Length: 273
Image 1 (cartoon, rainbow, N blue to C red):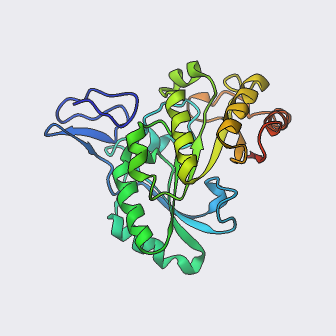
Image 2 (cartoon, helix red, strand yellow):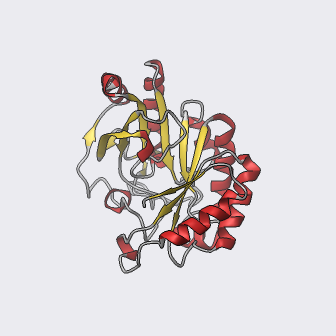
């Protein structure tokens, strides 16, 4: 079975799973192995997603599962993003149970659901179904994603997701290839999502990978061609996973990159400082 969820297009034998560890071949069908299986759940400030311009000051019930279709050596959530269901403990919640939980937290400032922590779009069926249940209760839905999935997968959830934060990891096709992604697919995701939903972009500045002013200019120029009012979060790298030997991003460099981006975008924010 060829998985058509992301551009990796994994060829998955019967009973096996794809690179992301969250999709598998069962009786010749492409199924989500992570459906309703949560590894993380927390009531977070919405700014932590980060979403700075979508209902600021509110809180959101944030949930994650396991698995990811990219392989970033600097991943901050690798303990679940690179895990399979054999590696982690999960709590099973149906879409309705999750939506009811979100609704019960309204008095604590909760406005809805955020699918985050690992890559939620590889388990788009749960995002779709839980978002629908939340919508029935008048709540908002958010997704924090790498955006590296095929267009028809985005269309499954787009009518139900009110806001996206999309990780634009680099503006280099070569860098994306090394990370196991596809820059053009992510660009298409951003462009389409911005047509219907609130969109914010996060770029983690990793020393030696995407920290040049030339690359930031190219990124900002392209993003402005979509919509120059889209907020761009330029965030500081800290040593993680396979890059624990690197130094954190220099704060003065972040400020220079912010100034570069501000020449083309209306709303640029520095994070993790």
